[in-house]
Amino acid sequence: MPIIKSAIKRAKQTIKRRERNVGIKRDIKTAVKDFLTKPTSEGLSAAHSELDTAVKKNLLKKNTVARRKSQLAKVAKDAGVKLAPAKKAATPAAKKPAAKAVKPAAEKAAPAKKAPVAKKPAAKKPAAKKTTK
Image (cartoon, rainbow, N blue to C red; front, top):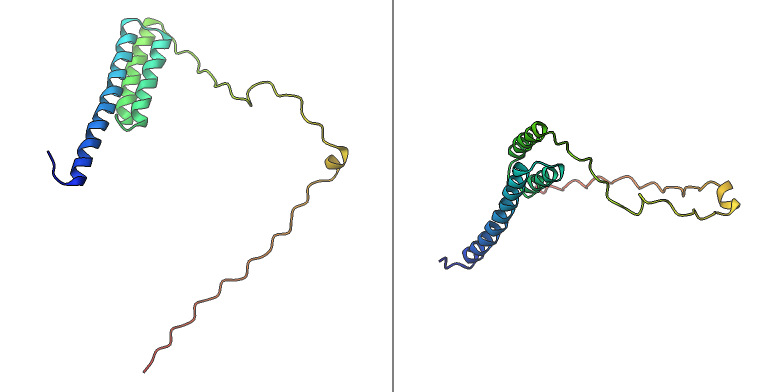
């Protein structure tokens, strides 16, 4: 067991990181196994999602995940499964727009005027240092 405070803290952080990483890898393995046992579009998207999460958290390299996703896509193609189109998140802007507030005619007619921008004074050069003899 470490004696120095910083080494003790580092050991605790290592334990926490390892538990997190093992959990993410376990999620990847279960999602991939579920897809391989019964190929479905939902299973494929779940496996892709878990792999993308691993890349985002720097657990796996980008090319490793690309290779694994390619292999899963090949299995899906052989099984006749197509990836479901991505669902768009329901945002308030995506919903039907409410009735727009009516502006008075005066505001519509007069275009907004821009305030004049004040010029910044030119930067002064630093004074030269005086040398003594």
